[in-house]
Image 1: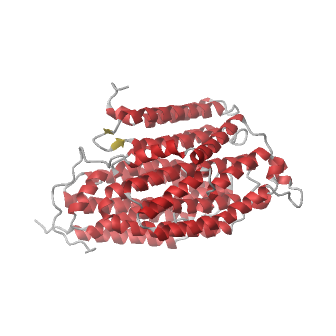
Image 2: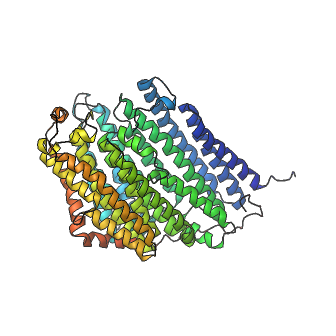
Image 3: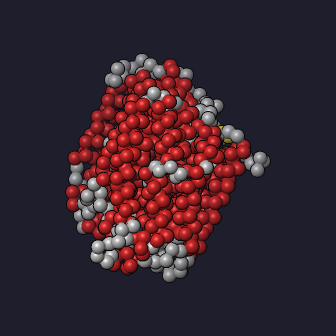
Length: 103
Length: 507
């Protein structure tokens, strides 16, 4: 039997993925890309849940992942609809140009 | 009523509201496009009143647990159920006439408000973080749509996308916090987390989890430094929606925060109290200083709501039962005056919202004296002048902080209340000043105050006054909420299997 990968490796990978998500959320200027980085953060969370569920021998962590997936899908549906609405009114998806409201 | 199973009884208000929401959604396409959507609004109002009555009945049943210990209905959750129902009721009343003739599919608006209320109620009675998460998302997703409800309005869509992106960003942090708490304690149930923290071998991981959860919920209650979305979102969203989303989701988020901090992470209070201290001081200061620079009334009220989130966070540094009671009381008074203020804004600006700045409001008392008087009352309460709810709210919050030896935080809060006088009084003075040039914008928007909106405004004003003149009865309810027992693990026991010997990178 091959040696198991330690749980910590998965946790570090998830932390890196989460940080990439946070970083690209803050840096990227296209709304779709920003939206993708949120999905990346959610998937990092899922990986953390699965890793910990394996470590604790608890199924509840894996169940949580299913809920996160379902809710992320619902959020994507609403989010893409809002993105379409913003494109219809502003003809752009660049967050720097979506600045009608400033002090 | 006793014959019903606990699973039905415990979530009865949520069931009622869900059924009403689905009925409205089904009836909306059946109505002819040109006909009024008011009957659907009245159906939503009826459902909200029924849900509030059901919650009131739950008060007499003691503590109920259902769904294998994931739901706990006690005085604490009933308090927030009643508060959320009241906010929804007033919001529905003031928005009945709002969409008349201006928007199609207004039925969806009523359904979305009701659905988001279901999510918030689930948040307040959940003792399992999974259910908290689902409730948070139900309420958030409905609110994202409500922000952009004025189709075709560029500011509405912008407000919606900003709220959506930052809200999802915050949710990801909240979820990561739950995942780390699961890693540190082996469970996502609040009771089991509290039990697991005592024996955890990874306290740093638990603290990191709490910090992540605080970031996530900090966004939802718009506390500084997580407040940046608030002014833009509030400015672009329809006024009745702003009144709703600046109070009800915050009340629910504060309820969750109370449960998570005082119950789940209670053993770590000495560590998170410092974080709360910083968040509270920052929110109060940034909110009040930011509000002083604003010319737009909705943005001004947005910054003031950041400051009020700060006042509420002050109570988190207090002792358990006193702090919870103070948070409950302040959340309720804040809801009454904030919903009331935005109800007046709704009536003044109408659907198109051409009237924005403080200059546009100048001389409102001459044109529409009743509305100006209402707005004046809410502003006085927001300042915190005695005989209004705002005064007693601030009083209980600051005294609870002093009782737990956080005197400096109370001093910062009192200074901030002084600063806040400045911008509230500036708006108040503008209302009662004769404009230099004839203000024609006010004439154009003038519509007479409808009966439902009048009832809603009167309810908000009555609540503000009653909380200020006779706070005793209501404070009693808040104290009972504060004394509600922490969730105990009935069915869900903490994991007994010790974690495999892994070396976590955090240690």
